Image (tube, rainbow, N blue to C red; front, side):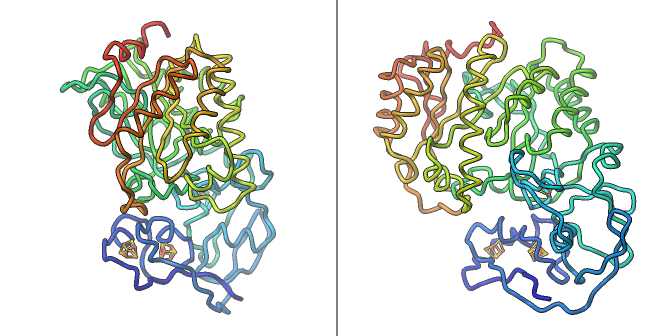
Length: 415
Ligand code: SF4
Ligand code: SF4
Ligand code: FES
């Protein structure tokens, strides 16, 4: 049978990311695709190979045969299981990141949970995809880089200080493939330990206590991809956090944040949320996010805007919400930015906006820094729309506001 494997091309710049920062044993490719997604120079491509040797597995109680050295997810696909990449698609296995980061695609392998998208099939494996059995195990995901930060680095911008103001971790894996991802070395790295929500909550609380801060943040990658994990993490954290006043912020690309998911996040204890708005139209969204599937891009952009509407209409007085809106003239026009501003104004003129420029990073290292004048123009058109809580940042200077008083608009005291 023909299967896909990864091959290095002459574009390789010997950055070694695919050797040291991803979860590949480098001994015979399974075609999982982690190295292809993570390579900053597009130097990894797929190649078809014949794989005749078969191995036997038991899947959901049935004995089956599949080609050797493929992932469990691929084996499930071959066996006719349906795979979804967005909560609004139907599928027996939900696999949004497909690089082993989010853990959402996990199945039971010989009674322990393993991410099916990167785990290799082995002779005699017993696999269960039964949701009723899976929920009896604690969910897992890659969540690392537990670190302290000065205010303003994550999500909602605050006044930068020399002091640590928050403790955060970064969830690995993302459903998007943004070519200018500024966090790509975390997002697409799949090294580190898989943590349960309880383990992550304990690490978070221990860091928060150590630095004596009253704010924690979950960033990424995309932390929302594994809903059971994230909601359980927030619940566990709220139980063990010694400071009842601690704010918990979620940075999210909002692409899978359905209204019922937002309701659940609020109910379990997310107090601050910073959804990204990456364009108004699917074509722009594809350019910014690197998605090559128009239908998936449509679903993601629609879900994002539904999330924005739900948050602004129903949670403006309950959660501290900042919309993070990236801009670069290479990806989105000023006219579309104007339409975005208008749309947000109509939803809620009090909305806090953080305009962020795309800088050279990942697969866009030749991107020019956006001109400060351009960012000022974008800032002005947001103000012209009637929105007035608008901060912007460019290059290393972050955040900037026309009037330093604007910073005070981003005040969490009332939430
Ligand atoms: S990640 Fe890409 S550029 Fe870096 S070593 Fe691997 S193939 Fe080469
Ligand atoms: S990361 Fe996956 S696709 Fe890349 S070489 Fe390793 S097994 Fe193959
Ligand atoms: S889809 Fe497999 S870990 Fe995210």
